[in-house]
Image: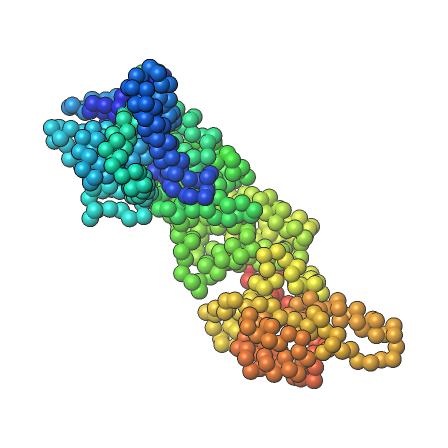
Length: 631
């Protein structure tokens, strides 16, 4: 490689055109005031403005000393960063060169140049406008059209937005696109800067801006030579930085290997890759455990775990993909098969986020998210693929999901810190199912068999007796993180409502809160019976206090009703629930003859056991006949 410090005039002179390769990511720079780690456009503009202001100040000092340049310190240029350029190829009068690195800053520079040119024209400064235009647009004499008339061609997903703003085509603007927003940002900043200048100084200001952009903004221009691997250099420059997602490097790997077999890269990008991954959803942040990661990274991690059948570090996604691609992309047919499989699974993963409401699949996935156990997605993805391929039926897939849901939800109630072993369980399940490409003879039975296989605490699938005992006797209220106690009560409400209406399509109202039937501060309005025996009274007080947060003493109410009832005695609370609540949990409370005379410790025990059995019905135990028979 050869490197040199060059001005914008040198970099953008003549008929050179810079092209962003297909394997690079789209334009992502944004203005984010107040977010220094994410704001790229704000500092870029400040650098330009400060350098121009420095040029104006030096010009003022030169005038003060009678125009003698040597009496004033020379202008210090601003270094804008590096661009790495591949070997040129000439077509007609235009020389095309691929930008291996630095496309974000180079694209940003051309957007600034176009905005500055237009503002110069609008303010009647035609000479600076003409000079600036030469930096970003080819000469009219070349009679070029479309993107060819500009000195940069962005990657495919940015081309429409780039063409619209550079061609000043208002009707074609792609609103909301990062390219459009960046251009508008520079228009706004330039207008404010000029409007705030002293009256009569516009000519000097535009001349200074033109000279600054021409002469005093420097790039490190790094040119590749014959034998240099352009995509490999791109990969090396970006693999350790935070600028690229692992998925961007995966694209680089796929296209590099596809190129060896003369596969049409334009068609692959246009019809397959960008059609999917240009969707902003893939770059959005999604929570898994304690961390937020882009959706594309989570898909890649889940997919690689499924493909390899072993745990994959979130910091080694690209390396693991590269190892897989090396073994599976060895011919044209193998490459096409591998890419189709990868893209099909990406489609499945994306579709999981938009499943219709009130389906068994959607409810299962929503519950995984509610408990923050989406770590199970490699298993989900594999089973879903096999269903689509006809290897298992939808009924079989739903049976597997139901068994997995029962296993996970019973465990989180019974097993302390159940989540610590999830990664281990996922790998065990994948291996029990077979491989990503070849299932065992009966994968659903194999999954159930694996879940049943151990009764120790690290992998146990709790039995009905263990599950009921834990639910009905533990301090249930706020025993779980992320208000999972509220979730379990919502599941009970849904089950009771479903039974009363003879339908599965039930939506529990949002915004409910937990209400203690016997209030937490019960002494004033819920006194214990007088016994005349101090020790008996203490035992009775302890017995009540032990039950205050148990399942049998909890219900759901709206946020408005909760404070209204407060510490009211049972008669008053029962009347308000009867009058204002439509929930089945409360209908059971107020109409059950067992509670007509009062609600006490025995009532809590009886109700807790009964509600726990509803959750047993929701999540059948390991030996229920809902599951396939296993050895």
